[in-house]
Length: 283
Length: 297
Image (tube, rainbow over all chains, first blue to last red; front, side):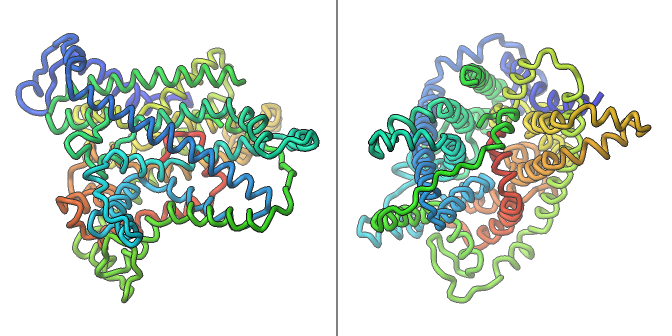
């Protein structure tokens, strides 16, 4: 059957690993030593450990700050503003608007390692472009990755991901029929009124879906943080995704790392179900 | 726009809107263009740095025009950092992934489109769930599984895992394209005495060509950019692809300050150029595809 190769690939790399993680999370499997060769079944020990692990509490909090800051506040609001700006520019026939549009897209299509590296250079304390600029303005250098590491990774992630929300809202704005505006204008509604009464409400359904999409993709962010700060300094930028990796490969605790992975997968299922509910309600 | 195909496709046919706002004051023009400049500066500055640093023998972390533009950095990454190996590995893995993906998703998309689907909602659920699964959550289990299956440090392992990444979305996308080919057209071809396979190639595939282009472009780009799986599947020098070589070159320096910026920037330029080329050549298709895949690159 035509579906077989696809089904095989998907079971090998999505379904298989999920089941493997579920099983391994119930053992004390390690990367090296006796527990690597002969892992013992430990029941829900790993889950209990997770609940009382102070580091886990920290990384959950970090993940929330990261997602709220970079996805919900940053990408969402900036994306919406950019979409409104570019849509307005298009109606005014400002040709140069293509340049900021292309720039936003460029940041988005690049491999994440590149994004991480570019921002390592931007944030460099002594010679980074950011501090060179700030010094020229007389504000003085800021130790971005040392003193404000979370803000730094959030800015980098906003830079990288804003295009997605912008494109979604640009698409939605194009579908608003123009006669609504005409009618409102004839009624004497000013620009703000038209924006609040017509533009924003018509964006609301797609906004909920966009928000959930970027929450899901931001939640899983790994390589950007890994290249920028490696979760540090200390554990200031260590999110759940990084914690699972570090527990498994730095502390060699595959069983415990799998437990964290299972929690992430479960959260993703919850997000996805919510997403489907909302998109159904919309249709 | 949604994560999964069908809605994304119905929205492709957006009616052209005709509501130009002519005029606008001169002040508005100036203000808008100041904002354009600010946005462009924020999003473009890192790239300006990348491209100037790559041609600067004494590159620093700040943006400066190279006093004597040179190809030194490019020569060095090939002579001292064995960049050629990483480059050919990356090309081989990405192209193989693309070919395998196109084959698999065309086949699966066509089958899904031609069979009676009762549990449509469940398939939608499954596609969405698989497509949004964070790769970072599968790192640990895929590492464990690949070790047991002997798929580490092998091209096969990399190609298979990279093919799986965009698969759920692309299967769904292809199904949408095949759905748009009327079944009667195909059946008429069968009646004309053409074989099923010939009908598929002569009638169905040409209609699905844009879908195949998106599948090819997206699978190439995502395999080219993917690094998480490379990180856990590869530790042999000879198997490294560009993102891993790149990552290690600037990570191995220790701190942030000792990075050989010029060399890494040169690697970065060679790494992003194909992405930019493919992306801007097929911009419209890619934007549509990427938006509905959510996985991003």
